Length: 322
Ligand code: AHR
Image 1 (cartoon, rainbow, N blue to C red):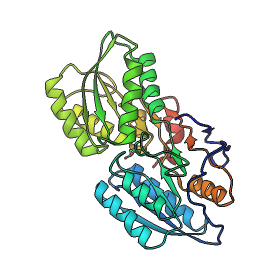
Image 2 (cartoon, rainbow, N blue to C red):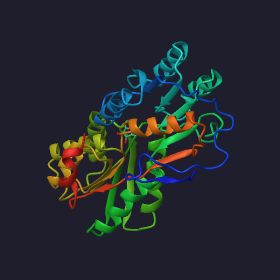
Image 3 (tube, rainbow, N blue to C red):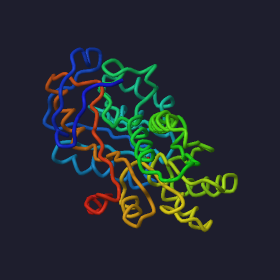
């Protein structure tokens, strides 16, 4: 699915695509809205920043916000949406933890006449379509994020042979699927590189560290780590240092997100690059919802443009990082 691009500068204005939400429930124009935001977990800075962005937006956008935390359980996230439907929310913003298990929640909310906006992650694109089963997906191009990480590596790796360990995100989630596809396809075009292991670290720092410790024993010659998010990259750095390796010197680390710890790691010379994936969806959610309520057509994918952070600019952005 490739639709119109929203640049960071134009975060709050987007263009319409014809034929969007013909079959999704309308949203009445009201002074205040009861808004549901069903967060999947709060175990990393990215999720905490995303939830905060919704809370920070609530008053200025006239939302009575019901925010839940599924604590890493797709089943609880489905139950949280059920509860929000029972509480009579006007609109649902949902970051689905995994692509398939959250399909019933999307369908149920839509069936209850509640417009659904998917935020930052998507559901199975073969089953649920924007403009039919949900209004729109608000988020980044995860395939491109993986491709940009590979591109940076290809341009900046100085060795003859890159032995890569890939730390994948949550199995079955759209960013894990897409970031893997984007990176693996691009890196396969350069025969200096080989991905010797690719294993999930569930987007979590501790698990990233543990998986890296194990993979280091099986592949002591690893000299590149590609992590699907910064938390796992920081975990991998810890594991490498414990094993006496020197991240940034004998192991190149490439990652995605743009957290404060990752920018600090870049400044410290331990990480090469992190491709931005912004968690600040509150203002965009407000704008899209208001336009939808006003009867404007919404593109099926409201795409967010991401920056890239390297040694050239990390220090310029660390103060605004989360
Ligand atoms: O869906 C976006 C991903 O989810 C972020 O990259 C990751 O840090 C988060 O848990």
